Image 1 (tube, rainbow, N blue to C red):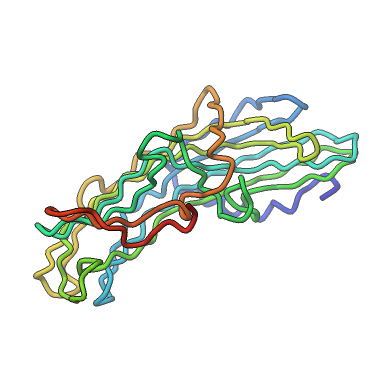
Image 2: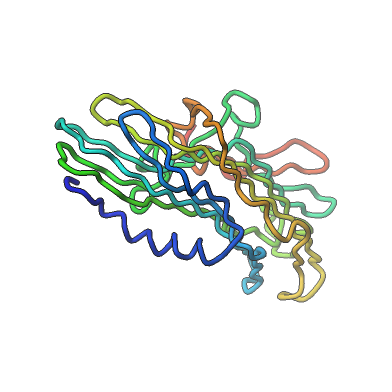
Length: 283
């Protein structure tokens, strides 16, 4: 994408939204210059200051939608004298996951990342599953193809949230009777702003972010549909942290599988052996 501007400016709309919302962590002000003369003018990160919404319109599943995590960065790439390609974008990894759905005294279903849970890896890729290691390839990255004669100035942005479905009934049961009593979710992520030379595989970490999403929903399955679920604390999420010192990217965050393909749904009864309900897509 030669020239002075990438096709990344549509993300200005997202940046404007962030500025209007408040509760934004920002390191705007003094520009920071990294290797190869790459300059980061501004980084912003926030979680929308709204509660998780709950949808009981289905008689089969409860759905909920968490607020969005949002990040944006303004970057300047100096002229590239050689015939080489640089990609600047967001890489994200999950470093902790608890996702339990309790069904009274019968037991619980649990989405799990075995390698992460067993400590075999430090974090697992949260890529879109196609454009490894990047979180996505639209507003999330910008590609600059050299040689270029002028600075390339662009904004890259990303957002993330949860919108799952949880069965009212025990997932291994043939019964449709609602037994769901509680949903607990607690996930932590590290998000990196990175510049990579695709010709040399040189990778420069420009910024590191930490963020966390916590969720607790209490459910009374005996109440009528539409009146069963209630959001518990925390109602508001902690805002992301923009680190003053960058952290290295674990190798497992750069390669397959991503979290969606590695997760497994387990049924863990109060009595008896656990069962695999949905195996991982990637073994």
